[in-house]
Image 1 (spheres, rainbow, N blue to C red):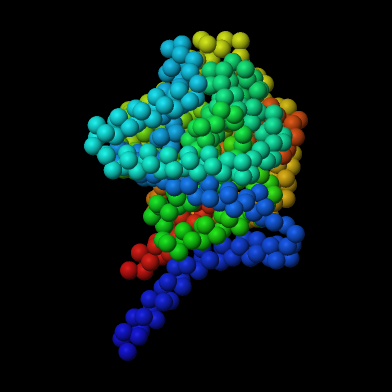
Image 2: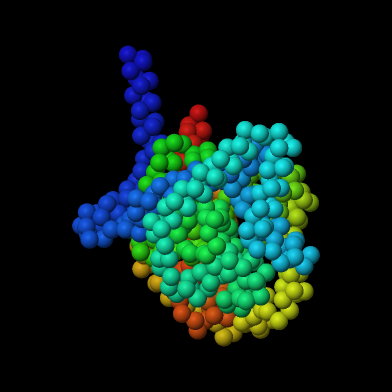
Length: 475
């Protein structure tokens, strides 16, 4: 009898634990299923074919092996962070070489950096991991070479992709980063994310000399987010819910589909970078971490786009005051290196396309004295946002989670992520009621969606922790 009561209590506990996450996820998942059933003409995966799935499988295997390879060298990392370590190393070497007046192609940089990684791993006696990494790279290269003509290519080359992101990525891959900086598609537009896009293409298509957009490179980023979730401390069932929720949310919206998995837009890779790096630096143990390389990599956020640039620079100061770790100031180095390159090598180029449009002193005075502000833009921004009901639903859930976290007694790695998201909203509102008050009001949504993966993670982490807190208080 006692055993039966215990089993019933255990089942009830599990139901109670998962009830909130399930209730939150069901509307989005059911909405996706309903639209799929009632609209059979809409093919959610029509941009992928059988060969794309093969290529994506090997691409993902390659990146997992890269993450494990780097993790074997830097034990403090996981697979997700290891992948970012690896990708950033190319850009850091590129900046150093440009400052030293070297103008090398991406293929040469690729050989130099990979050689350095392999030598470093062999010095560390990581023979098995090195062999696995090289073998997966070779197999992926062969698969892509064989099936390259069967892959879905150059889809959705429209809008900013056509005018900025595709030309930047092509110039970097075919002619090198120095050439791309010298012949900018849009003067003063950041190129770090395009560099990563070119590098991801280089990893899978090193044998090609001509750049083209391959859809599987965007799908890859979505799966890298899933790897981050897989490595998190969340319960297995919660992880499955996150996978289902994310797929339902993105595939149910043509706009999200375009931004995150079916174009060269930078929102997907930026959302992944932001979540992994801020969640890692939010960890109290990691705040005291003395490794130099992590802080250099964290500084890569200051090379991305507004307002993540401003938020990352603020976070560096916050982390210093919280953790009293002076090495966090190494995060300023990538930003300073890029500034030096622009001011010394490209004096005639705009350093920042957006900042050049702003009279900072006048804007500050307008905000201070409430002059020349278009406050009604706040309403129009949210009106545009509310057009996408599932995203609105997610954002409302995030702000409820944020308020809950403020008044709850537990602390977790989502705290700095949540603060960063709120700062992002504040910066967006400030910009669009002042300097950009007369611009179209669809673009603020893209700034909001830069944190899409972070919204999902914070909400589900909070739902997961809600039960843990109640459970602790009951004892």
